[in-house]
Image (spheres, rainbow, N blue to C red):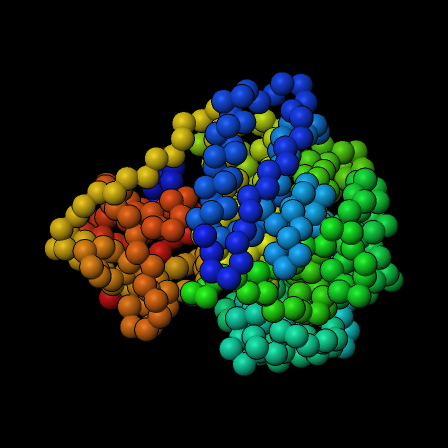
Length: 473
């Protein structure tokens, strides 16, 4: 399939009061116009996505040039968000796990080419021969335990052990030959946490405290243990037809090394910047953090060994990762060309536009790039119908492997899992030239590809990665 170079790609129940706390700009890095534009982006996405609270920090060269907090972190007690609020960061935790593993690799304690059971001797599951690097870049083929229907409901409101969690996926067959595809899986990073404990002789969290958080000067980052007293701990929320409700609680060993960590925007930005610039990490480890390993067939994998998505952002190199967990949605990114770091934390999961969209729009303002302006091109039904059908994502999969496109009410829409999946259909906005964006998030771009004049597949820019799909017959 031809691959294109993309150029861009009053609430019910409780009344929320918008609270804004902005710190002084250091060094005059941002103009008044930029500050106003940034605030406009944050408040618009906060309102559209129904985020009770949002905390944002922008770092340039190791110095905070903007930090702000909007809304509330505890709606029941009307507690205002601040830049010191501590949010669960979800899957951004994976970058900490990867960094810890790569430190052990650099120290000669862990071998990237070794199989899982070389370190977890009692692990006899189907993934026992999976290589360590395949855990790091989601090419292991291990089923994702948070996507297993009979498991999902058991993860909420229960105290589960490491052994119980591994038991959910250990005996399941691999989804594909390791190294041949990318399929995001929390299970692989759970195993990495156990391997770090086995190799280091420390608990996962103790290892991070001694080898990552303390050396990098992170004083407001925590394991996520709900028994620990955490100053400024944020509460998570869901939003539905009846308004806001409290998100389901979870035990910290459910996400463990795949997503349990709690942090602040200042600590998160400090972490991301210092991994790339501090001698504490060093070149040997950093080279591993940014290393990409292609699939067996040579297809590129945008996911680095350091659990970051490497992408091109309008000509600027970018490393990023987002995180979702019950009631929380986060994103952070680093632009080495600009030595620019952006960290965003919110307390509503699964919302749109996402913190990823917010980060991308803020980055354009800071770097000085043109604003992304989505259009609403009206296309006749017969023209929209040429895009309809099922498409298979390969070799990178984001969510279900099949995306279905259907025409309803004069718009093209996505049916995740296929046209006959029976789930809700997400409408798209036509941009012309075979391009569409999500009606909820204009940073989620789809570009259909033609061969011989016929639609043969599409490219999708989502979460800073580009996914490819081929039309199914």
